[in-house]
Length: 260
Image (cartoon, rainbow, N blue to C red; front, side, top):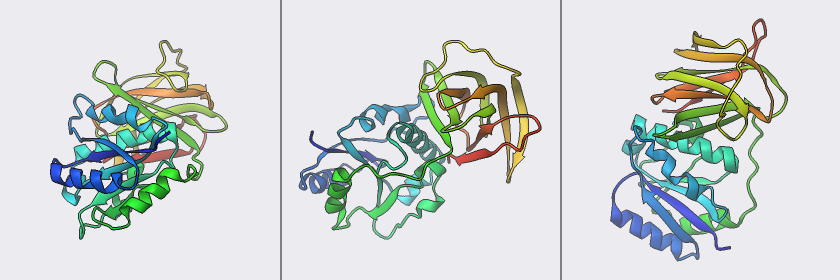
């Protein structure tokens, strides 16, 4: 099986993309890709998911400038796509951020799902060999997470976030959003949206101050294990998520993911 690279260009420079295609292709890697469509209303970010999940796709290359990466809508779309790719391929799936020379990007300043990106100048002479090494290296094991996080979306079903524990059990579950609204929630088998759901002690509209942000959260007291998930339908593009177990009287551990 020939390894391939999926390239996402945030800008519309065909010359830049053609040069990168030729440079990477000269090292024996097949290059596929697209120009980013910045349209959160129709959830255009989900369009590349299928390609990124193909076994032959060995790495994801994002080409963008500081200005493009400063756009909240682009940051959100990339974050959402990264969440669902990491959920299926693991947090160690290689992602490279190619930027113009002199515009170094600090990955630590990016939203939570994008912080594993490896920044590199687009004209770096070592780009080809680095991608070849990533394409043929064994899958990199990322530090294990205590939680599962995924997102589903299209204009027909809307946008749904899925959360749950990797190991152990949550005595209840909650998800809060900052800068958006939750419209519906449910519990069901992990990996698929529930067709029906029985909720135990459903709670809606809790206001939670965490750090410098206020979240509006929904919750249930259903027991959530590794094969069960809590799902929340979210309207809009939240700045960040707050999620974790929910049990009255317990010091439940919660997690935060910034998305913009």
